[in-house]
Image (cartoon, rainbow, N blue to C red; front, side, top):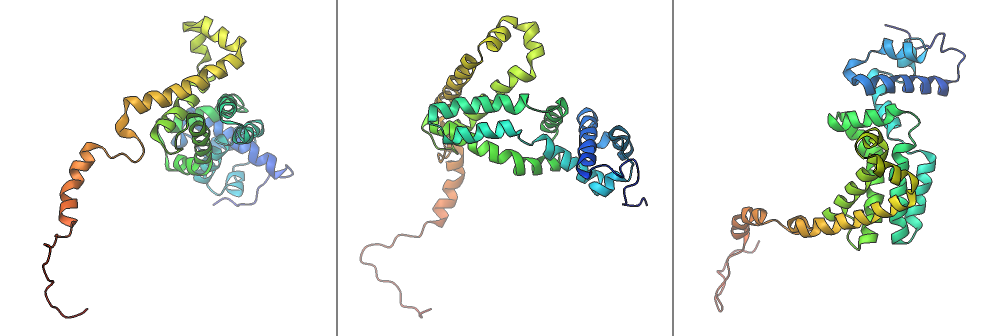
Length: 259
């Protein structure tokens, strides 16, 4: 069993720099092959550290993968500032700022492996991804729902608001992640969006509110707190059983021992 003491070439290096090098190397490999396709020896080689540096800094490959995935979900400092501005702005401006945040959240990634690793996990999620969602993504989701809810005059937990958030984020992100495809299939669209970014943000904001409205009218059964007919039918027999028998007017209760 290797010693947990980190030998050269890690010795003498700033521990934070060593961790950063390991995470970056692991991120590239995990994004390309997934967790099961990467060995500790490969990570150490690409990071330029000794093999023992991985257990020394992370404990195990599983823990390294979790840290790498959390790092991929980390919000860039400039993106976090947009989130703060959105929460303090009036509804319409807050929605436009949230669209800017969605664009920046994808485009501000320091390297491509963060985005590729997240998309790999979205296609085939692992327990580590569920943990990353709870710790990093859920807070972002909640404030985005709050922003769209205020702009649409709806409850933040309403399904139509959630649909609006999904529409907004995916549309905003697509013009960055799929720009290669747009160049080939719709070059004029890509050029127009690139030339007039503010107009694109305004367009996505309007489409977000349209998505909220469309979902409400298209799927009325999904509205918050409204039970579907199938659910009512399933619950009806149980409700009848649970209902207390009605006593006829004037009937006297039977005498019984007090309990």
